[in-house]
Image 1 (cartoon, helix red, strand yellow):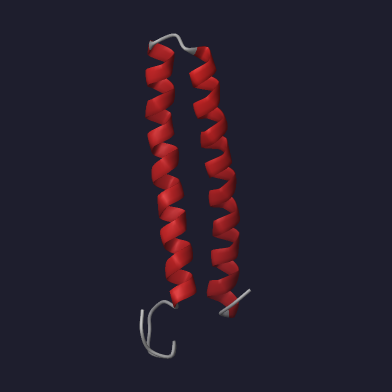
Image 2 (cartoon, one colour; image 1 turned 120 degrees about the horizontal axis):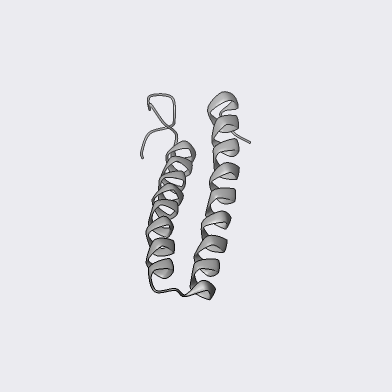
Length: 77
């Protein structure tokens, strides 16, 4: 996003954080499908792997969300 930041709805940083949060949300949703697929194949190691990856992305999403809230309130971290 161009401009000096005063005439934009979102700063580059806000946009980046929103995009990262969206990507994590999409990954979490995909992992739910992967977990179901692994369960159907009775592959417990794969179920556990996808659950672990899903939880990591949930944790990352929460951290991104906290940063986004602060950036939107204060304009930076």
